[in-house]
Image 1 (cartoon, protein in one colour):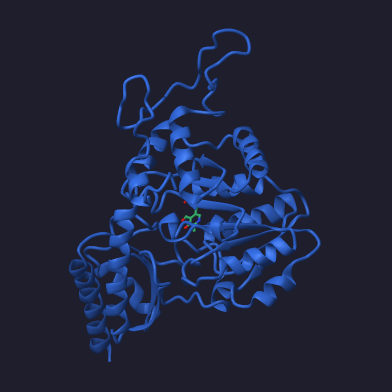
Image 2 (image 1 turned 90 degrees about the horizontal axis):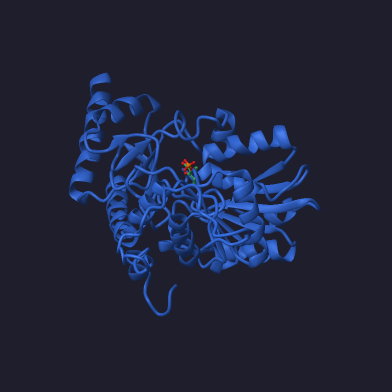
Length: 375
Ligand SMILES: Cc1ncc(COP(=O)(O)O)c(C=O)c1O
């Protein structure tokens, strides 16, 4: 973090005092893809927008600082961030990845396995001895989502880092659900952090973006080379939108978390809710209701929550992972680790907690009545 300033201050000030020409407070958006050269071999640090863009630089420098990394790279989506990171590896390399994982990551890992010959082992996040046993001679990285999505299981990143360091393996963490407001994996020993910045960092369900942050000069240089070579960079307008969203990250996270904690208390005491999964921080939680057949009427009955497939925005969302975010994970695999057909995932927004809980209550009351009518 910059000097002795707190994270809230750093976030609110992103981009300010960067425009030397006109002293704009909101960082300017540089749309130009090309930059004039004064003569051969002489430019002002920019020549072509894929290789570098002043608006993107403001974002990337801020994100590197926020996560405590050496270099940060803004990509066109969270999936592009994962793809960029795996650009570091080659055929036959082996990876250990979280078992309970975002369905899009599961799908991409299958593509990597089919087309590029990468090999994946899945770890359930429970036994660290088991994790150590999964490491092979060609293991190149351990890829962790914590909390996991959608079962919200957390792991000890410091413990994993101790294992990866001992075996000379990279430790990669998807920090989308917690954000640096809650957790800074690089400080806990991880080597690379990935974000779907589409979620909490942007925060308003209006920007698709990804980020990769790396510790250390060498790995940052490799990623910088790949970022430009692969080319899935974030456009200048989206960089600016993401900066604007991030300015209120701390405020939003506090409200998301407070609301989620109240929702957990409500759900835990409701007779139609059989399980609640909440990691204790941030605004994401999942819960199971008594019957799969009640999922559809429950979703139809919601009036404040939006039934939609994303998370981390100011508006409260409910997602049904088995037909949405995790539909690419075969049912038998999902069920084997506890992702049931009765599970709903909530991204608790920043609305007033009373209204959020009232909406859940009326929808649960409605399906409760359906059960009574049926019996
Ligand atoms: C944990 C996690 N990682 C990565 C992604 C992919 O990000 P994007 O949708 O921005 O491509 C998502 C998207 O839902 C996610 O939830």
